[in-house]
Image (cartoon, rainbow, N blue to C red; front, side, top):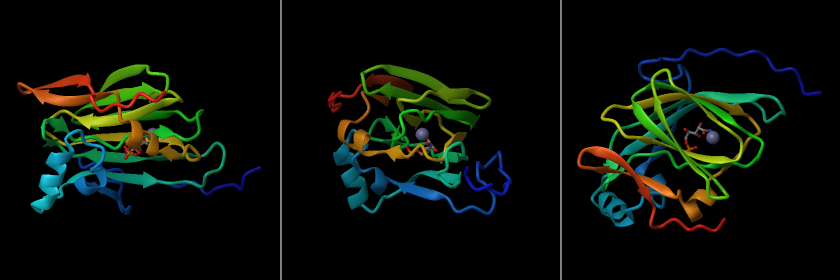
Length: 194
Ligand code: PAN
Ligand code: ZN
């Protein structure tokens, strides 16, 4: 039996997406260097002193005991690197039975989902939309709007995050702005290693 945890509660600012009294994890362009398609654009931006914040994560982490849940919010800013919209790194859960729920709070986004066997799924994410990410699906969120994308998430605290697979293989699709609209296209750099 796991030790009985104390119930906790927090306040969420639904407008700003922040969880009060928590320090966010801040992801800047320099943290996402290898994830964007146009590496040379990233390098030029960094070389000229531009290192914008791409997203922030407010997370209530629980001990990694079976049955406990982590939850929090992600604030994904609007913007592009070259033609590619800002996104989260994306990951697979290390535990293959770990699923996740996303609830859109604000903005206009896309969740790209892919399995290791090559299945791809695309879901939109916006206020009041709930997306269930079943176990086994890698997931990345993209902000395709002009305003900040904010969403709430909850997943098993012992899920673990595998970023390496995404770093090496990438996502099979990327989301670009073309003629003022978002377009999901094949990622030419995708390494299909199965
Ligand atoms: C989310 C993500 C969060 C940031 O909490 O971790 O949006 O994205 P990356 O972890 O890909 O940088 C989640 O899916 N947790 O499992
Ligand atoms: Zn996840």
